[in-house]
Image 1 (cartoon, rainbow, N blue to C red):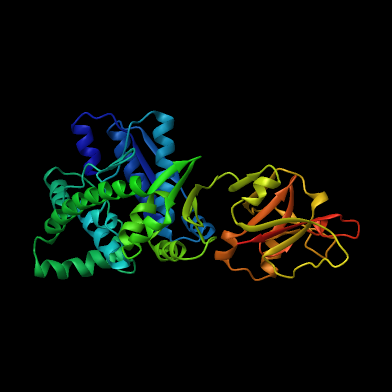
Image 2: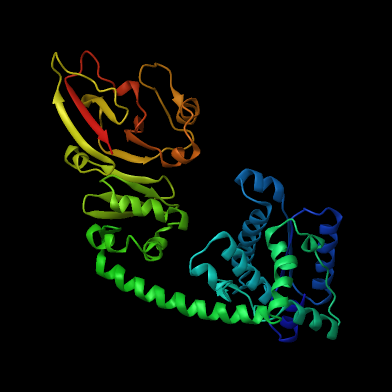
Amino acid sequence: MVMAYLFRKAGINAGIAHCNFCLRGKESDMDEDFVKQYAEKNNYPFYVKRFDTVKYAASKNISTQMAARELRYEWFENIRQKHGYHFIATAHNLNDNVETLLFNLIRGTGVKGLTGIQPAAGYVVRPLLFALRTEIESFTTKNNIAFREDKSNAETKYTRNKIRHLVLPFLREINPSVEKTIEETIAKMKETEQALEEYVLVIKEKISKNEDNKTIFDVSQLSDYLSNKTILYELFKPFGLSGAQTNDLSEIIAGQTGGRVFTKTHIILKDRTDIIVSPIDNNNSVFAVINNFSELEKAPFFDLVTLTSITDDYKISDNKNIASLDEDEIKYPLIIRNWKEGDFFYPFGMNNKKKISDFLIDKHISRFDKEKLLVLESDGKIVWVIGHRIDNRFRIKPATLKMLVIRAL
């Protein structure tokens, strides 16, 4: 409400967007009515939307707070684009910034997490980030600005509220100006982050190169930083690496060919003397399109590809990482991609098709392993659920003349 008041006084052209997350019954509805009346009285364009926040959180398997954040920012951006606004202004204040730093510190964070909330990020701006909550409350009194308080803010069941009502009061006993002191620390950490980014950029230019939409790191030089997880994380953070995946990355760098890490946006793969970082196609997550046998021999995820004539003494390996296929059934291009909902195949030994999702459930494949699962596709058909089962249509048959053998990493 203070921000709306200041925008009006400054003559800034703005609108008000109000989210009703439907979490507090009549209280939520009264908040909505209050903001609506203010907007009408002061000639603000008013936008309102009600969300089934609990249902959304359950569908995404995330917290209610995270669900509310996702819902509001997506809606705000839709309004910004539809109505031609330049920015989305939120009323975060210095206390919010301090709480965020402490929250990140408690759960574990890198340098970035110690820089708090950014005053501007993309189209989002936070013009009140400099002000203490007590200063804002004092301003409402002096200027007769009406507001409503979310009663859940007084509860201590949420971590952020525990920091607000239990941790910070204790810290103020030690340092009455703790918020301002932490604000100074945040400023110093931003400078530290900037210096770190410049240093990491120098390293990246020295030990990596870009080639065919991929970034390739030299393993021998990258190994020099195995003992410094911060540098490794900062090097690969632009590719979606999370802090929790940094140890996995270290093991892959030090390990054998074929190790890989999947982030939300990239795949990081060790190939002999290189670490290859490739973007994931968010539409179908295609990692490779293989146009002929020669390309198949060099394809990622496979370390052995052979084509042999069938003889009386041929044997089919029972190793799940090895696929023995009827070469006559293979049609190029072959595609290596993530499996997706709706995919089906005919599991080896079966004449009936089965959804891959059901196959994975039957095999008790973990959620983590499901996310990493790849398939080999030919002419729209699943040839192999890599590392698990080939499709029965591509099996070796009595009439098969040539056997294509592929071993996965």
